Structure formats: C-alpha cells, structure tokens
Length: 468
Image (cartoon, rainbow, N blue to C red; front, side, top):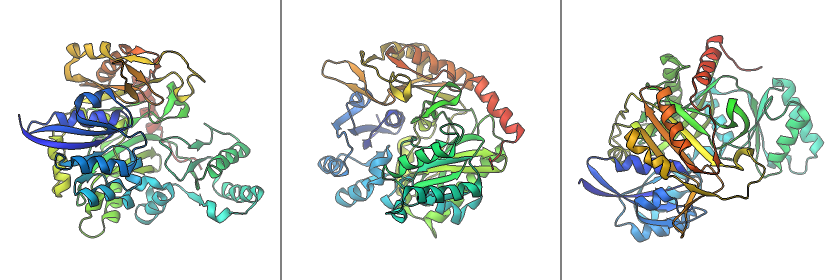
C-alpha cells in the first residue's frame, strides 16, 4: 500500500489534475489530497480526501484550511501564480509549519516583467532583447502627447518591430506584437495606453523572431533538476493566428530537446538558466527558491537563444507533457525538494501531445455563446480501455454541480494528453480523446502537427533572427 502522505494542492486549471495524477502513481507512498480549488473540479473532487472551494484563492482562507488540517498534511504544492505572488508560502509556513513547494513571495519572479529584464541584464545579458520600461509613476501629470513623444523617441532608436507588454502578469494575455496586433505607431500607442491606463507599467522591447521552447526545472534551493523541453501554442487559432491565450496545447519529443533544436541549443538553455539560478541563490543555497521558479520561455533566434519570460510555477499546458512520463517517484521528488537533496529526474523517452478543448466564446472563437454548457467526458474516458495510460484526461475550467453533471466555465475546459513513441503517435491519441468529448467546445487542430513542426525546422535552418 505504501506509506501514507498528505498533500495540499492549490488548484487552478488542468495543471493541478496532472500533479495529482503524478503523485498518485507513487510506488512507495499512498498520497491523500487536501485540495483548495477555484470550483468543484470533477477530477479533484474524485481524488480529494478533503476538497474546499475558494474562488479567489485568498491566501488567508487557504491558510485557515491548512491550519485546520495541518496534522494530516505533509507538504503542499501550489500550481497557480496568484497565491505565490501574494505570499502564500510565506504566510502558510509561518503560521502552520507545513512545507510548501513554491518560492517565497520575493522570488515570485513573474510578478514583474521589468524585474526580469533587469535581472537578465545583470546576470545573463545575452538573453535580453533591447527594452525600455515606462513607469506610470514617472509620468504622473504628464500629458498623453508627451508620453507619446517618449515612446516615439524609443521607437526611432530601435525600430517599430516591437512587443508591448504589461509589467504585471496577465496569464499569457495582454501582450501586443508588431505585425500581429498592430501595424502602425498609432495603433501601437493605443495598445500601450490600454495597459498604462489599466494600472500597469509598460515594457516595450525588441520583437524576437524565432522558434519558442519552454524550459522547466524543479529546484531545492541548492540545485536544479531539469525537465525535457516542450513547445507551447499560445495563439487561439490554427497557424498561430488570433489572440494570445493561456495555451491551447503543447508537445514534447521523445528526447530532452525539440525537433527544431540541436543538443547544443538545449545546452545553451541550461547554461543561461544556471546563470539566473546562481544569481538568485547567492552563495551556496537558498531554500526560499524551493519548487519551480524556473519555467523559462525561450525564443531561439539567428542570434542565439533569448528569454521571453521567467515564471515561478509549473507551465500550463507544458507540465502536463512531462508529469505523465516521469519515471522518478514524484512524491519522493517533492520530499527531496523540501529536504534539500534533489537529484536528477528521470523521464521515459516518450513523446507527448497536450490538446485543450475550450468554450465556444474562448479566444474570440465566438463573440457570444448562450447555449448548453454541459460537458460529458465519458466517451473520452472509455478510450482508456484502448490506450491505457497513454491517454490522460485532465479537467480544468469545469464544474461538478449538484445535478451530478459537469459544466464548462469560462476558461480552458479540459485537456487530453497523448503519450507515444513519436509526436505523431501521441498527437493522434490526444486528438482521439478530444474528439470523444461531448460538449459545445472547440480546439486547435494543429497542435504537434507534422507540417507545423517541419515549418519550425525550416525556419531554424534558414537562421531566423532578431528583427532590427
């Protein structure tokens, strides 16, 4: 049966279901879950010893739940960024003594994109594009025309091909890119003002052209245990069109790097992340970094790898690619992070593809949808008889209601993970799962598609580079 271990899970999206699933696979431990959820996620309700809904994931309320159950909880795992940014670990560990797997508040590095850029400038400048931070406080009382003049001056310096980003986290959204979201300085400035007037500082940075990869690593404060690279699909529609989303799907190859990369590209990523880690941890170790402060989005360009952003929690959907093929006991990995003796993490040499099904009005697919929002996963679950553990189904923005049925909410509803010897095999399994979900949902059709991957390979061979 294994030694009993109680695990607190702070849940938002399908990422938490993947974490619970991985912890459940432990051979040495019997995990029991104490879940704090934004809604009654059907997967979490099924697997939880105790399940509580805290829609805003308020840190104080979470702490009260932990305090009540602290004698049953051995450690906690925080999936979303909001509680981390708000000091979840600081508060809970101080008041309850229960160890949390996530960084302390001051290392919630995704709280500020500007802070990330200045960090990189200090320790890994080769990963930075040219950039400028526009602080709202500096422009208090300044006319709009004067702000525009300063923006224009910077564009004169680096060119119009830029990305305009909010400093504050926006769940993968809020970023405007020249050529995709605007093609004139006037429209660019409209986007700039929408962020500025929305209460966030703004960063304008050189647009990076290339192929994106997501690098993830667990951390115990002394060392990193790196995971295989994945490729995320941020845009809503096929062919990378439409608005940015939280991620419509992702793929992983059967090795540690992606098909458009070489082993040397992966090694360059590791060197850069190690530089960041060395800077943050200081001399020796820093257990305040515990967990996964290194989900790093890279852009591979003709001028080497550049860093788009750094996050302090697991990627979604990217962690769903990795956890189903982790050979190391995940409960043991968590204990090792807490104890400060993290070792290499072993994964099967398998490919995985994650596909998200989303509501009709998600990502601008429909302006409005007022129809039935019931979702039935039974057809997808029935395929487990055909595929076994090579198909995983992880509900996200879904709610189990009193009538016993499940309903889609406003964000990404459910993802299916296909596991195979090749990306093509994994993709077909993932797509088969999505096709057998009954509900008014839609999904991208090109996640992990051969033609999409081949395009990435061709672009890298041509030597894509920074637009200047």
